[in-house]
Length: 241
Image (tube, rainbow, N blue to C red; front, side):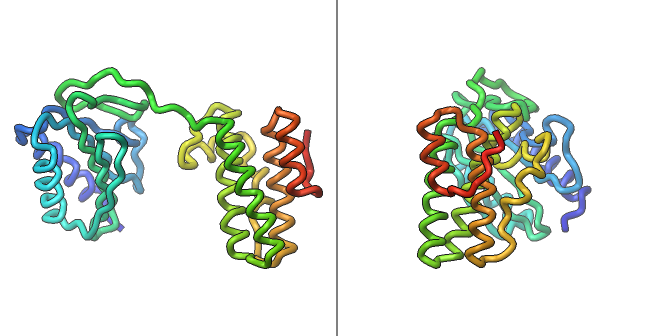
């Protein structure tokens, strides 16, 4: 486990490196540290505004992180923004975001500008409710067919995906963050989902959890036609209306 003082020192080193890199015209802390919510387990989230030589900047900063004892990285792209996620030998996670300066700015509340200028950007939206319902229904179809075919591990995989979407719907309904499970612990009664966890891969246990989860999905649906289609997936589900 990484020592907190080493995490804090590495973050200071990265800020100093950004301030002396002439290609970096702005920088911001993102994530929990940007809003005073950092704890023992928090990683480093650092965003750079780059006005030229983007590929060279990414290459140079990647080399810097490996000098600082990174052991691997993975890339996530969002439009022209590259999020390069590093795993340090100490298990610390370091997320470096490389933004073109013309697009650099806050897309959510966890953004604290350290230097430079930030553009006014639209805030990242919550997931679409109708899409979540559709995805939950599609996963439910595959839960049902997988159980019927005796493919119990596929059924469990689909059941877990279905639960993710239904829990996101509950987050939307209660006005908490519905992205990546960030608002789940803020729900008024997350324990309602306890019965949706399958305790084994026995078909009867998978079916039991599926029935409970289908009932919770029905609670999120107002369209009568769609509700009828979902109800047909698992006739034994409780509707809790």
